[in-house]
Structure formats: C-alpha cells, structure tokens
Image (cartoon, rainbow, N blue to C red; front, side, top):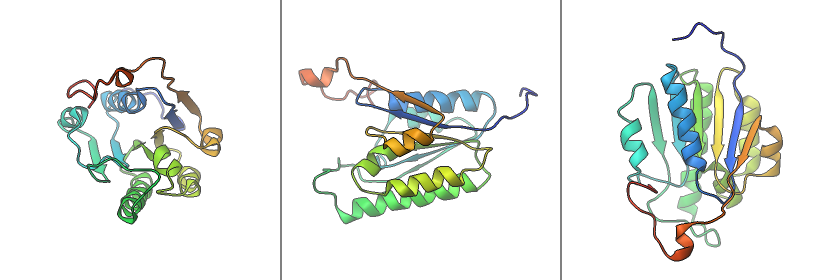
Length: 178
C-alpha cells in the first residue's frame, strides 16, 4: 500500500442513455480494491440476477454487495409497493454503509433511475450526499440523474448512446452484457 495521504473523497455520477454506467463504477471499485481500499456495492432494482461481474468480484478481498429488488423489470408507469419497499431498504442500507466507517468506496448502482421512477425520493439521496463522511467516496449510477444531484457531485460523466445492438433486436448476452 502507498504512503500517500488520503485526500477528501468525492461524489461521482455515471448517467445517460448509453451503456457503461455500472461498468465505469465497477472499474472504480477495481481500482480501489487494487489499492487495498474497502468497497461496498448496493444494487437498486437488480435483485439476485446472476451478473458475471458480481461472480468474479465476490472472490476478491475487501468487497461486499447488497442486492435489492426483484428479478423482473420494473414498469415505471406501474410501480408496485413491494418494488418501492425494496428501494427504501436499499436506501437504508446505503445510509448504514456510508456511515459505518467500514468502507472507503460505496457504489449505489441504479440509484438515479430508482429516484427518477419515484421508488425513492431525490431528497433522500441529497441527504445521503450531505451526510457522507469525507473519508468515503460515493458513486451513483443510473439513467436520468436529477439536476440537483449533478450539481452536488464532484465528477459527472454522461454515457451517450450512439448505436446499440438492442435496436437491431439483439437481446442482452450472457458474459458480455450481464
């Protein structure tokens, strides 16, 4: 481990309609793990889906996960109470992880979309950011990041879709898309 002093940790957002938001966050997680830091990932709306990256990361030291949600996709025009409850539980887990002192990096995967679809309130995410200790880096992913979150963040990257195989009818592929 390097003897460089730890500087203030930041808030990062990966958003937009293009592919790569979670992948960017996981790249940050790998970088942190490679420096001996402790990482916790909270999955909003992804349940226990068999994501390939989770299988590999789970073998590494200093990383933990909490998946919330169901295996089915959420219909944003017809959100069910149990889907909201799962998102509220994820938000509470995020509060606890950020405040615990156990993690250097906390990733809230798909939290932006959960707020956009009204599963949780943006104001609650704003509160998380305001309460974040300086020694915790926080990454938020998902489409439709609220302008207030973007304003509060230190780094914001928007993934822009130029072309996507889904538009040609190609479904998500095991090993490449999940």
